[in-house]
Each structure stands twice: as structure tokens, then as C-alpha cells.
Length: 108
Length: 122
Image (cartoon, rainbow over all chains, first blue to last red; front, side):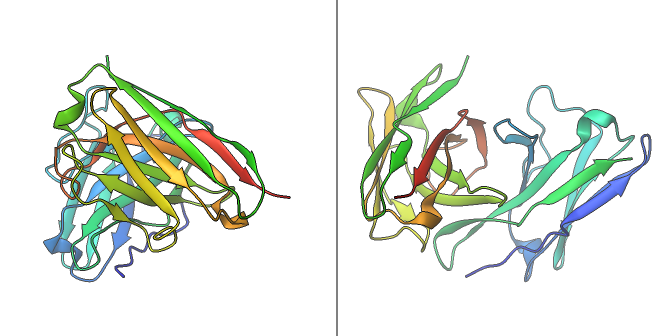
């Protein structure tokens, strides 16, 4: 089945830019969605494959997707962005939704 | 306001069964697919199952296929997850979520419940 690979952790200082990657075979041909999960809370959709952000998600969150890597970019990182982030695709070959293993974003 | 409220979790012995429910409100339930996602202790998100707005599909993760059954009652705006032959590695918080389209394979999950814990242990 399709595998999405995310680095386990990324650390950035406040005000810097965080780039969270999601690797997969030819992922650039797939629709990739991104979620944030803070400790003790339910996951939250932060950006969909069309680059649309739900109400309440700041413009600092953006995405890109090409080749074998999709990227969630968080500009001007704030302490409140500290969370686990997951990428997600639909794998049509297996008829499965697939999540990446998640990246823990630490704000130094 | 969209609300998803899960219930039915708890402690169950290995080999046992449990039925989770997710009561939805604040949107036209029949127009959207619904899904279950779980998170085991110390692990990441794992998709479990999805069902279209009309009940088509459904689709299951390999880890639960043949043991879990998803269903929905559009008259009650409720989606269910019947779990049987439960194992220790089914221990997790189970979330229901709303899909952004009626189709099970299209669109992200835009609203999530707070989750219901399931513990499989003797």
C-alpha cells in the first residue's frame, strides 16, 4: 500500500519559517491534505489540497506539492503552532485513506 | 455549528465486541461521507474506515477489514463502527470525522469529534 514519509521532528525558532515535508511515490499527482493535532485535542484540518484554509487558520500556513514531496510551510512561526502535523492522501490503488507518520513541530 | 459526538468506547476483553456511535448535527448529514480515524497511545493517526453519504463503499483499513463494520443511519444523523474480534492493538482513541464531500474518496476531513477511548485488555 501507499506510504507517506514524514520526518519525526522539526524545530524552529519563533518568527522563523517551518517547512514540513511529506514524501511519497509520485505524490505530486495526488491531492494532499494537512492536519494539526495539539496534545489532548482532536485533529484540525489546516489546509486542503487546493490550498484552501478553513476559517480560523491563518495565512501563514501554505502548501506545495511536486514530484515526490509535498510541503507544509508555516511562516512566522508562533508558540501556538507547536503540534503534530500529518499529511494525508487517498490511495486509489488500495481504496485507502493514508496518513503520514506525523511530524512533531517544536518551537524553540 | 457542526458537532460530532462519539460514544460507546470503554474497556473490553480481547476477542470482544464494541459498537461506537457518532451523533452529528449542524449540517445535512446525508450529503457528506463520514469516516473513523484512530490514534493508539504514542502513535500517529491511523485511518480506519469511511462510508459515503449514501452508504456506498464502504472502505476499510487492512488492519480492521473483516472485523469492523461501518454503517450510518441518515434518519438519525449517526454513523456507527461495529468492532468485533478486538485485539490489544485496537486500543486507541477513536475519532469520527466529516468528509467535505458526499464521496468516500474525495475531500479532506473538515470536522472531527473529540474522540472516544477504547481499551482492549484482560
